Image 1: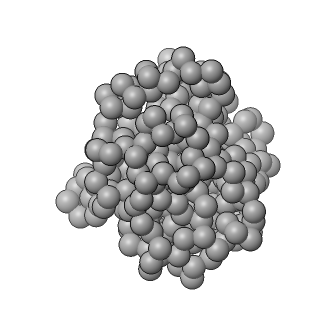
Image 2 (image 1 turned 90 degrees about the vertical axis):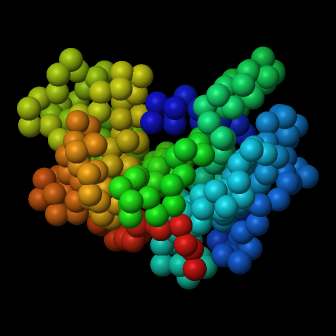
Length: 285
């Protein structure tokens, strides 16, 4: 997640029309093509491939396979249209993402990312454009990974984009990443206290114990949202996963979450927020 905050970037295509956001890109329309004509020049210096989901851009480098890009697109569509009826479940969330020009950017690896962005870091205004992108690397994309004991991190990175730029802005009192929202109040309990910096040692009763010191409070909130929702959707319970993640997160099943974190469970299951109830599998129908 530290790269999720460090590598969020660029203002791109302004598609903020709410009606249009619910009508763009039905399942059969997902296609990987070149960049659209109105993509800014700075994007053309980096990316060669593009698709979009309900108006939300996915940009990728030439090294990325089309099927990997389409897997990410399907995952995003499933999160946003969880009942798969062709319309987004919560237009306000998608409208906020489009208003902020949120986009997913896909690279072969971190070396490719670093090399390409070295070329534009001195471009005037570059600092301002590091605001609304979420990175995804080829190694993160593991379709059907749980069936062979690997986590498909597409679930994480796509959700970070949606939570940070969608839910946190559509419902700041509930999902805002600053202290005092329903989400962060629950997180403060889960961590055993309100810590603006990673403590030297978490309290013994904490069940969310992320220790990346580059991850500040709002970053911790984004991670907490991801852990809680994917656990609720039974995405963290496959064989061997608990042993891999328990140093950071202990409530990895729906039952553990319901019994162990009543505050976030109540928040995530509140129907007014229309959160996903089915874990995306990369097949948007």
